[in-house]
Structure formats: C-alpha cells, structure tokens
Image: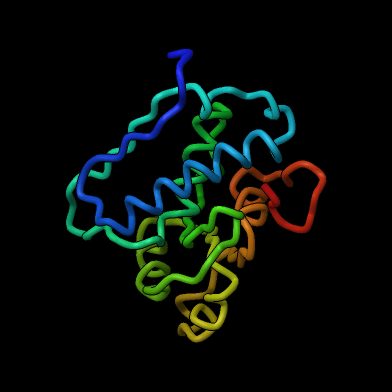
Length: 171
C-alpha cells in the first residue's frame, strides 16, 4: 500500500455529472466499508490507497449519475478483495447518505443486460413502475431487486446483509 492519504483520480470520457457521481461513490464506499461491512471496520484500503478510475471512450457517452451504485460496489469489491456475484447488473444514482435514486433509460438498460446474459438486476425502487411497464418478455427470466438504500444493493451484490442495522446507512 501507499501508506498515504487515500484518493480517487478519475480520467476518461466522463461528463461533469459522472465525475461528481464518482466522488460521491468513493465517499460512500469509504464510509460504508468501515461502518457497515462485517470484518472491515478497520479496513484502511480506501482511506490509504490512491485509486484511479478510468472510463474509456466508447460508443455510449458516459455522463449521468446512473453508475453511482456500480462504482460504489466496484470500490467495495476492490477494498474487500471479493467479487460481487457474476450474473449481476445494476443501475442507480447514489447519495452521500446511501439513498438509491431514480435514473432514466430503464428499458434500454434492461435490454442491454439481457443481451449480455445477465440474470439478476438491481434497479432503484423509484424506477419500479418503469420496469413493470415493460413488455412481459423483457421482464421474464430475470431476478430483479428494487433498492431504496445502498444496503439493499450490497445485500444482492455480495449475497450478505451489511452489519446489523436494517434501516439504512447513517454516516
């Protein structure tokens, strides 16, 4: 490890909103790891390591908060040395207090997940109606979880509940 102050450098084709979202994800992951994940209360990884997140240029412009829950999960995975379940896709904006907020493009995201062979989805609870409005053939065969807080996302991604508290994350 670097033994210094932890930091997150973000590069690539990220718009301003996604840049902000990555900073929120980093702060949430740091706080969540030490406050909520059993066996990781003293894990110094996110507080001490210098991390670099790069979003390469691709066909899809990357600007928006939709990757907040995904970036938080990736940072926690790295810090814990543990992969999330492999059949999983997720979307959702995340707040500093761990609330999972609605995003756009649910139909397109569900279609992309199906094309990629994903069988488990985590969507914001506030987008439940968007999912339920989809044609039945887009919904069938999927295990779908609707998240209100990052606790809900963590439980699905890592197949375990965070430490004790069932209400929501309170930093």
